[in-house]
Length: 235
Image (tube, rainbow, N blue to C red; front, side, top):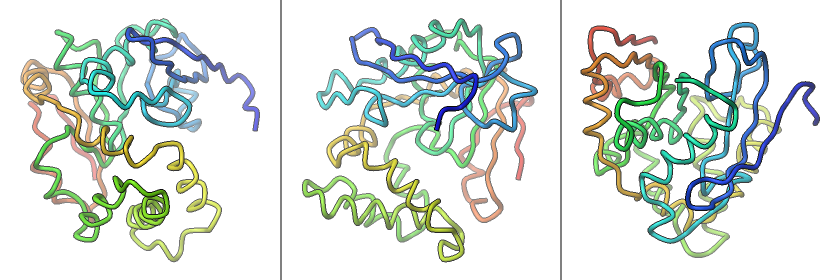
């Protein structure tokens, strides 16, 4: 469906990987790298498909999945849409990009970070996150055969809802369908790539604003939200 006013670009990151990005709204408003049309009266919204996902390129080698590549992708999108220190809105795995930026660019080129049910960074602590039933699904998502990966994607999508049986079929089908754009090997590369959260913690201590949005059912993530006096936490 064509969205009036939507601007799309296919960019090239520093290593040549193609990055698909979209923008909507008034460029003179504060910019947020995210898309939610209910915010259009307050912000200029830009979203992009992370490398390995959606319509962006999908490198499967070690170099193509280094942390700095993800930071370069963000900067390429910011430059293409003339964004000056935008707010980064990161949901789930998308939240990890803040760590990439803070690790490789100092000071971080952000006005603030908005986390929604986030995975702040990749590491061994991931085993302690999420519902108990996620662990076996996570392993199956990286399986070499397509049938196992697809079955696991359905289970994973259902696990993201508090009560999946009351969610309408088109919504579930859309979420599962979006997941078909990344292979099992692509998932493995994404969730095992190296990251160092030291820069993220340092940025928080230096005053980078942080807003964390999590439902009460996920209150156990609160101990991961390390910030400073300017950080905000919302439930």
